[in-house]
Length: 528
Image (cartoon, rainbow, N blue to C red; front, side):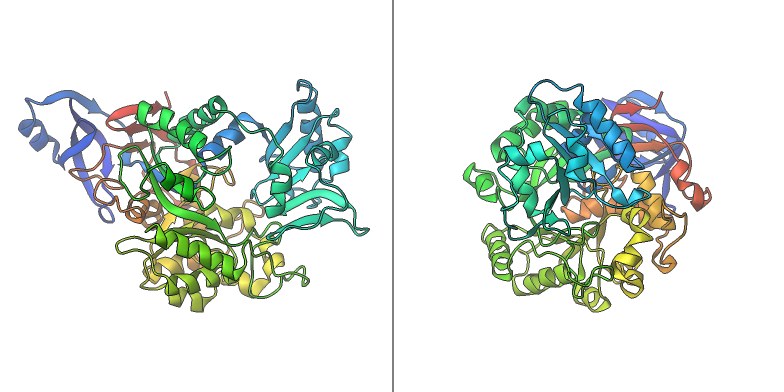
């Protein structure tokens, strides 16, 4: 079915300001772009539908790092991401607890104590008072920490005698008593006893998530979910029943190291390409997060000199995981927020380079010393950055790591200037999933706390910011010949915006709205 798209502006993302008048598509692919008159004449016998649109058309957005099921969970469960005080958290938990059936767990998502007047984690006893006897688990926005009430700890077999686990921290108060907070690997003491979502819930979470992603203009995502919901087989089955059948979203799945053996045992190949559902790099965690002081730094935290963070694995264990990926001919995708975590990853990539033609990923790369950027230059390594972390982390991160390190951190422009390929992600459900909000953050670097701009020299141009969510994620996974631009042979995946981001004042980028999202030549979201 031939379609002719025209009427508004069309930016191809093949270069700054590159535009065409019209696009001719057929069977979900772009056949040709050019002048409207020329395409009408050339394809007049094949055109079945002339689609005149208003607004500004771009290649559909691609989120280079998110958690599709996790985002769906956040939408389906108690969402605490906008809560502004401890009191409000307690109120929401009380209301939700009173609506539960007997023995049902209450699971809340996304609280951020740094948004509160008193930036101190909720205590388990506060939850005990309002939980009506139900087990309660509240996950911090970074997903590197949770708070459990006493009932959840009791069910999990956690007591005052429970010892810290490698790669994790069980928080205790001044007297050595449990507060209910568990960081990084210590979370598994609780999570391993929580109810495991069944296949129907996973499918619902994927559907809910994809519906929301499409409303934000996101047509494709690089997601990491396969190890958290009862094993590889069930989680992959949920994706397989939704994504290829609906043909409205393209998913590239990273494979957590805990399930990489399952992937290959079931006969899958990680680098096989597919239009809708495919596997990518082996995912592993090197450190935690800045919010809980578990990101691994080369020097101690400025606001807590007793720690420099948490290494999730021993050096030997981390090396064995990288060797396993190479044995499977897989690239790695490593969560590394602190500079020491990044250094450990770079050391291993230099020792064990990725397979020919593949790119390793360094996910986040927030705290980065200049000499580490120099070492990354010219390597087959990309960095998945999250521009919104600048907005949500400043200014409190200055207290956390000190002004000198903060001034070297979140160096998005430096990466690009040095020729390091960067993809733009939301890390949803950690941050909101809207690419236009992230583009605003990459360009303006404004804090949502005080409205100030931080490290102005690291601001991106509007075009560079759009590349993060179109051209670059396609390059990262070797799909630059079919995704991320508007050219012949590419997927007919578009987003139509209500304003031209290259013409409005950059302070107003966050006000742009998605009018329509098109996948495979079909409108899958419309604002009207």
